[in-house]
Amino acid sequence: MKKREPSEFEQRVYDATRRIPKGKVTTYKLLATELGCGSNQAVGQALKRNPFAPEVPCHRVVRTDLTIGGFYGQTEGREIVRKKKMLQQEGVDLDGRGRVPADLVFGY
DNA sequence: GACATGACCCGCG
DNA sequence: CCGCGGGCCATGT
Image 1 (cartoon, rainbow, N blue to C red):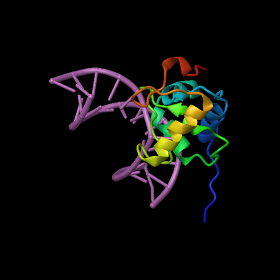
Image 2 (cartoon, helix red, strand yellow):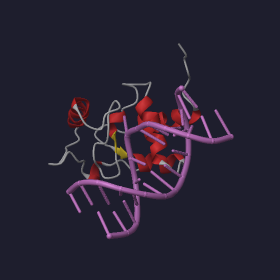
Image 3 (cartoon, rainbow, N blue to C red):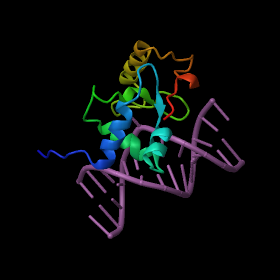
Image 4 (cartoon, rainbow, N blue to C red):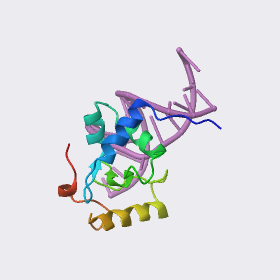
């Protein structure tokens, strides 16, 4: 078994995700831009690996389209349903298509 | 170092 | 609205 530590890039992603205020969400693009990364996908990679499960509220990170995106390696499924519920619990209301109001997006 | 993968984004038709 | 192709970056094999 290999125990790889998070790379600097991942740590930075977790740090940014961790400081997202409750009841708000951010987008991969905003994160990537803030981190200075021109690729949002790399950010998603780090979140998907998310070794700091409850520590890093990855469920508060949504796509640029304000859609839910993915959760635990799935872009659709019951895990996604869980993600939606979590957001509602935090005060984030989704519209009829499982989208998040733009006013709830946290800007860095 | 090359190849393949991915919780993405954008433009085009 | 949907599908297709290209791009951009980090990770794992």
